[in-house]
Length: 343
Image (cartoon, rainbow, N blue to C red; front, top):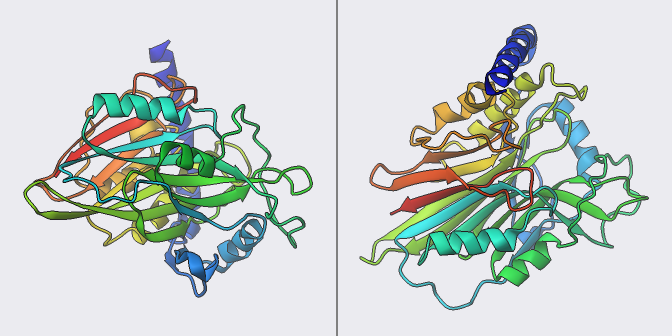
């Protein structure tokens, strides 16, 4: 079964590479991202926005943006200053629109990594709001995904006592049928600072990557600062088929890579929908930009079939990093990746 899957994956990638060669001639450079001329959220939220330079991307992204609500920023973490921090645990996980049991995951992480602060990079988080646009002008939206869970991301952060930064990528269903949006979230036991939202080059759906900063003091009094980024790339092309999807992910990965340039030290996590695992063009683009990445657990993360999820590191050489796949999927169709940084 494993060898059959690998053979099929190899043959599919050969077709994918042919599609990349056909598409790359005119489109490979169309990935650049720059600071937005205006904020796409309320100024009081103090979110820095980056968006594609391409006029074609700008037009379609504005339609998707019109159908979602504002970002969510909240701090439910304890107000007192944290103790000295010599180690940080980072978890990247696609929680399948609330299907995943984040509380159970957090208990497991706390048991396996005692005396550490924790940051969760979550994909497919969602929230429901009556104040979402009821009839967005020319708005675009995604097909509604119905999860079994009703735990919205802000309720989740409050229950866990964590800081929250959430930015919706897309409306979860037509406005007449759904009062929900979905996207990426960062939850942290430490305060989140310098918040940024990065709209990726448009392929099939609007995708917004997040970036935030955490900081602390080691037991020897040395201060440290770390930038964290959370991304979710498209899984298929604009025509909703896999042919050409590797090129689509490569374009998004290049835009993300350029947008994150200079944000060091940095850890990037997410669901990159790499159908071809570590050979996928999106993985190769990002891995080249994160020379501190050392993969010690290469197991598949999606349904035991594909390696879609990754963590990338660009940190000082004296920081020790390691990460592994969790043994349980905690109710999601993805296994979390759990990383540890020793400062």
